[in-house]
Image (cartoon, rainbow, N blue to C red; front, side, top):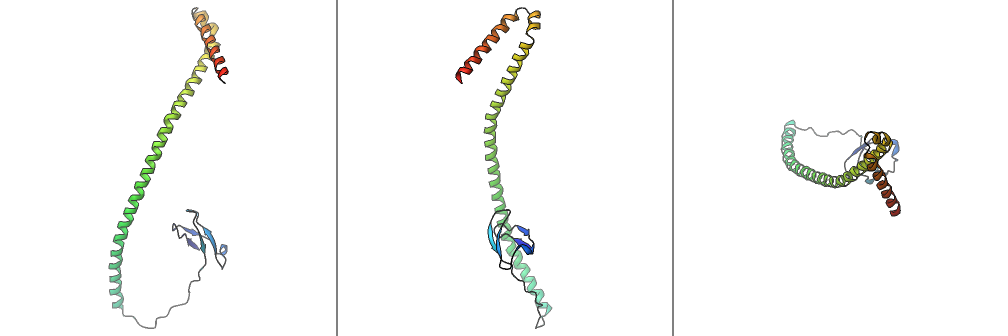
Length: 165
C-alpha cells in the first residue's frame, strides 16, 4: 500500500501486514513528522445507475468544468511560481552566507597551512645542512663559521621554547 505523509506529501510504499486493523503511529523518513494512520476500508461495491443520463448534458458539464479548472489552475500556477522564486532566493542567500563563512575560515586555515609548510621546510633545510656539513666546509671554507653560528642560534631558540613551555 502507498501511504502519504500529511506534512510533506512524500509517498511511501508500506507492507499491509505492518499496520494493524486498529491503526498505528507512523514517522515520515523525510521530514520526521509523526502521525496516526488507520487503514480505511474502501467501498468496493458496484455502483448501479438508476437513471439513464443524456450524453449532451455530460458533454456541456464537462466543458464547463474544464473552463473552471483552467481558471483555478492559473492562480495556482502563479502562486507556485512565487513560492518557488522565494525558495530559490532563500537558497541563494544561504549559499552566499555559507560561502562567506567558508572564505573567512579558509583565510585563517591558509595562514596556518603556510606556517606549517614553512616550519617543515626550514627543519628539512637544517637537517640537510647538518648532513652535508663536512662536504660543504671542504668546498666552501668560510661556511664553517656561518653553520656553527646557525646551529648555536637554533640551539638557543630551542632552549627558549622549552623554557616557555
